Image 1: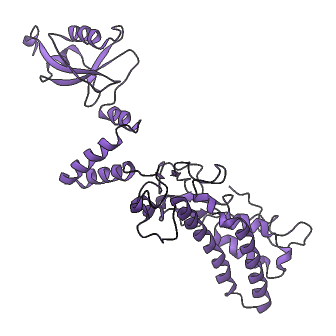
Image 2: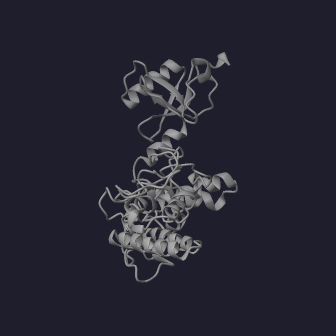
Length: 342
């Protein structure tokens, strides 16, 4: 191995800031560092070389074992290289390369046999084939495939999508009323449901949550249409950083339908049963409907979560006993311990 010293070895070098490669030949590592710094106009103090493939730093001995035309990265003091991951980071840091990446991914996918790599390429295409900047049906007919013709814009459909989900919660209250045996209590439940429906209608069924044209404080997405998973009910953030832009493609729109508006204090197990219990011995006028409205229909108790982060087990969070009845009204005995909303 050491008998090779003195013979020029050809390699390809580049900086960590650009993709252009230069052919350089040197007999040892010091000569290569000197030539590389001059070529790339980098300061020699603290400069070092590593393999482009995986970031392994070069030593003199390692340099002598390299195959001809091995790709290297020249780094300045304090810089690091993590292999091709760094190249991917640079590619995704700008939209400039998006169209090229789409074509490259499609080409690779056509011949790919590995299921894992196929999934990676499919996920890449799902996010890169993005027409989120288009809004109307005329501009992006493919996005509206399967969507009722009355919807002329993406935002209008997404708003309707959210409204439909939240209107369904009223239906669940009505369904629960049918399980009440006493006619008088059942009538109070239905009266309560009607009042809640009126409150929800006045708020336009909170369709603003999915509408990217709404004010920032009212929507769950960015102006471009990106939604981020808020994590399971007991988490502050999603550990997997799930995100999706249903405005970007028809496929993303369909996949977004699997995301859930999850009630932290559970709708079926806790909120609706607490409402029914309160109406067993009280009239609807005595019940704090604003509190139940917030629990059932607003972001105070709703989290948008990826299906993987939707914890369907019991949440064990209770309604706030002090909030169930209007101020000054008598509260039934035996209520559970006060539990704050998360």
